[in-house]
Amino acid sequence: MLFSMLCLSACMQSPKPYSQQMVESHGLGDFYCNRGYQELLANTGWDYVSGLVANAVLKTWIAYPEHTEYYDAVKAFADGSTNEDGTMIFNKKGKNALRPSNIDDLPAGNIYFTLYREELKKGNVIDAERYKTAATLIRNKLKYDHSRIADELPGAGGFFHKAVYPNQMWLDGLFMGSPIYAQWQHSFGAENEEEENEQSWTDIAHQFKTIHHYTYDADKQLNYHAWSATPDDENSFWANKTEPFKGCSREFWARGMGWYFAALVDVLEYMPRDHADYPAVLNILQQVAAGLARWQDAESGVWYQLLQYDATMKGDGVGDEVAGKTYNVGDKSNYLEASASSIFTYAYLKGIRLGLLDKTTYMPVAEKAYQGLLTTFIRPNGDKIDIVQSCASAGLGPAKDHSRTGTTNYYLCGKDTGLAENEGKAVGSFIMASLEYELR
Image (tube, rainbow, N blue to C red; front, top):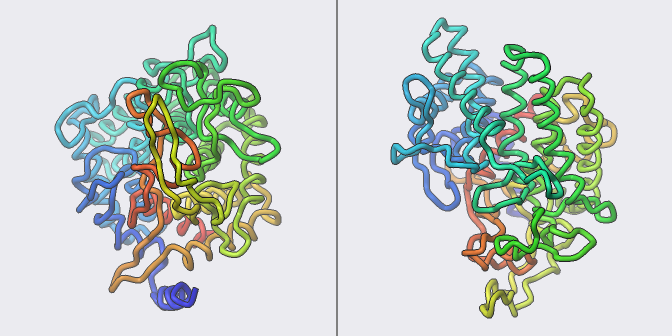
């Protein structure tokens, strides 16, 4: 605790806001994407993690436009991933970065809208149209081509998380797909027929209404990480087979709920308030906000990796047996987690700013959370700051990976769920939380 207080004191002496400090420490480069080191944002390949960082850097430029190097880095990232006319987005290997029905491939495209507006303002019509074309490519791929739960199944019309996870919706996926869909409708939807625009907003709302219906536990006031419409499918071996919460995974994973919370705020920023589904989506946001406030750690102000437990929860040392093999053996403790805590803080502060969440109720939660981010996770490192204690990654299945069981043992002791430092998911979300705090 003394170290944390000294860290906070040292960082507070810096004349630069924390958003800029983190952009210059790890936003422009020197961060990790699911354990893969990224030296420079400008030449990082297309990925939802690098896209999150790029979007956070771009938001910082909007707030502090004198830092043109921020904008230039994001534009270089976009230009290095987009062909000359915007009809293809490619990865570092030059292959199509938008794989079939992979919702994680989409959210980096959120940067295209600001780039479009800025280049159009500069008179750079060629680049502006290229960015609009690329954003439209992503929106159309999601709306028209992405696999959905079939009509005869519960949750019909919900987007698959990925093709390798058939008939599954994860909380993560709402952040990956819905905000870019909503931002496209807000920016360009009026160019289509009114009926199609209306239907698209209904489609966006349907994703939230569906996953909330199946994953929300009213007693705990939390959402399970994922849900499968076909829990007996081999790729859904992790799912509950019986009621209550048939098809749901077993735990409340913090970052999954963070993605969900942020997605609700980001979509409601653009959703027409006179749309028939607006009240339902707003109600979901308010339920999520109330639940997360309940599970905020009273001492630190931040949140645990597994939301319903404190640090006394540990892996059981026995592990999980699936198909005759044992996985996730260990006794690591539950821990305060940086990326989810940053995303929650961002969503609370932005929700308050937009008038979506009650300021009197939630500003104390958000301000305590932000101070908790600084004392718990931010460390001085020479002329930089680092962010520590982030879960590297987490998922569920598929059948070829029985280690991803969705149990307490998995989230605490899994091979891919270990702690990471300067992970892009924490870097980007901390920048966005800091911006909202600075502009509140």
